[in-house]
Image 1 (cartoon, rainbow over the protein chains, first blue to last red):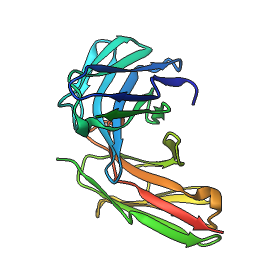
Image 2: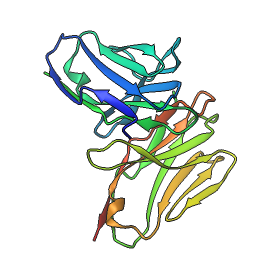
Image 3: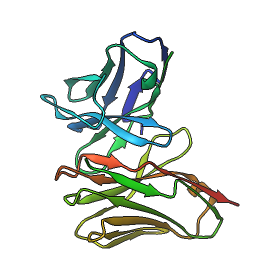
Image 4: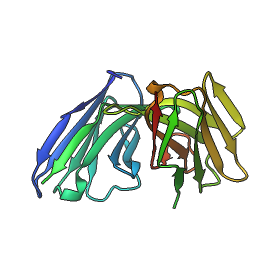
Length: 110
Length: 113
């Protein structure tokens, strides 16, 4: 779905580095989410936001922070990356029930 | 905490056969149960969903059933085709809202031609 974009698509970084993943959407949705996907573990919710002033922790928020700069933009930061944060990260948006996912960012922490 | 268990983790069927994937959930307040399909290298996409006030929903070759008493829901795919090969995720809402989801761990479905 080209309406939800993520940058970068791939990133390799080193332990201890700060990294930001960005998500933008043109769907006009208020709700945005960040998930990580690991083999055998499915999709796990990191943070979610129901509007610009609303930020909530998900299942696995430790080691992550987020910023909702505008309705259309939701960024995920790793302040000090560690190897077990190596994963595929998805942003998603919704206005009611269905969630629309971005293409994903593959992050490798060495 | 809230949990969704999904079985099997892998499923191989012959083209034309049926496939069934089962999930159980723990939060009795869950009221929305979507199924997402993720093709290799692609993003997850919603294929069907069901709400807690409905026992079954069908859309062409796919159907979902819900047993609230047992906290079970299942995805049924009939007349499987090679393009059905993908990872399928079930999910359940939690916290009394439909827009926070707990996902199952996924089922890799392989349809053999």
